[in-house]
Image (tube, rainbow, N blue to C red; front, side, top):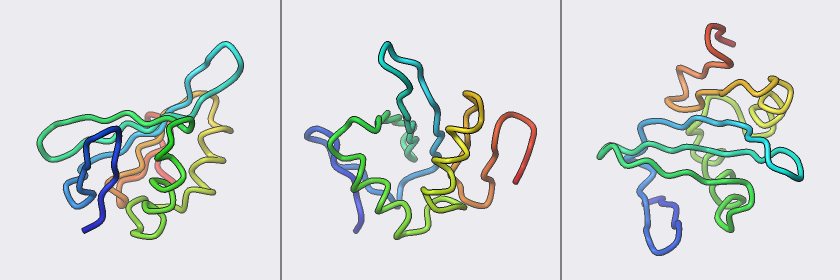
Length: 101
């Protein structure tokens, strides 16, 4: 069973129903943020500064839980001018509000 541990909580990736990637402006630059939604409507927000980030991104790639590998959606997010990207469910990846790629 693949799961991600955040703090003292483990979240089963089989219960994942949505992932949205965003950029947020911080004083020193831009921070990448993933908001993950699970079947029980619990939302978890993870930033690239969180200790679990590398393992999470690697696991999402390994399990093909996003329509595109992280190297592509990370570049798309940084080039997207602050638009959100819906990463999961993988068959419904959306870049920005109205365009599908």
